[in-house]
Length: 329
Image (tube, rainbow, N blue to C red; front, side, top):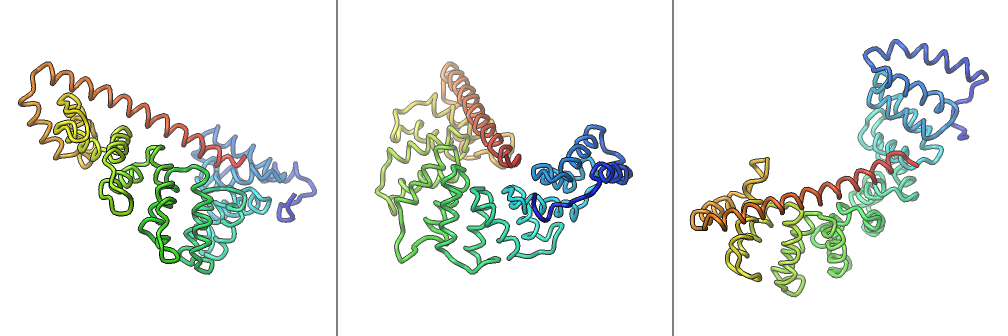
C-alpha cells in the first residue's frame, strides 16, 4: 500500500459513516450509479488503486455522487502514487489544464513521464509535445522525437500520421540539415493502411508531385483507391475522374458514376459533399443509358456498404483498445 493511501483504525465504521454522509449529494442519481459508487468507495478506501482511479472518474463526471473536481484529483493522485499509468495520465492532464488542481506544467510533465515510461501511448504523445514546445521541461527536439516514436510504435494511426507529418514538413523536419524520407514514408504507410485519411492523401500527393520521392502514378492510384475505400470524398471524386477519362485505369463509366455518387450523394453532411463530383455525376447521368446508370447506382451501394463495414470494424477495434487503456489493467 502506498504511504499516501489513507489508513483507518475502524475501516468498516468509517466507510458506513462516509457513505451516509455522502447520501445527500446523491440526489438525482440512479440507484445503479449510487450502488456502483458505494462499492467503488469501499474498495478505494481499502487501497485498491483501480477503484481509486474509478472513484476519480465518478467524482469528475458526477456519476453516483455530486461532481467534485478536487475530490477527483485526490483519488487520481492516490492511484497514480501506486503506479497506475492511466491515473498518472489523468493527473498529468489535470495539472496541464488546471482542472481540479492548480495549473502546473512541470508537475504535469512529471506525471505524464511516469505513465509514458510504463508504455502508455497517450502520455508518450503528450510528453513528446512537452519537449517540442518546452512546456514543463527544457525544450529538446531529440527527446520529443524519442517519445513521438514510442507512441507511434504502439500502432495508433493518428500518432503515426502526425509523426510522419512532423518529420516531413513540421518541427522535426530537416534535423541535422537533412530530411529522412524513408522514415517519413514508413510512418505515413503504417498510418495509411489503417485508414488514416491525412496519411493516405499525403502519400497520394507525394507520389503525384514527385518532389521528395520519385513520381509514380501506380503508387498514386494505390493510395487514392485506398483513401476512397475508407470514405474520403475528395479521393472518391478523383477516382471518378480517372475512370471517366481512363487515366491510369481502364475507362469505365459505371465505376466513374459509382465513385462520383459516393463523393456527392451519400455524405449526410452537406459540407463534406464533393460539389464538383456532383456536377460531373449529373452530366454523366444525362448521357448514360438507363441500364448503365442503374448498374452504377448499384455499384455505389455496394461500395458504400463495404466502406461502412470497414470503418465500423476499425472503430470497434479502436474503441476496444481505448477501453482497455481506460480500465488500466
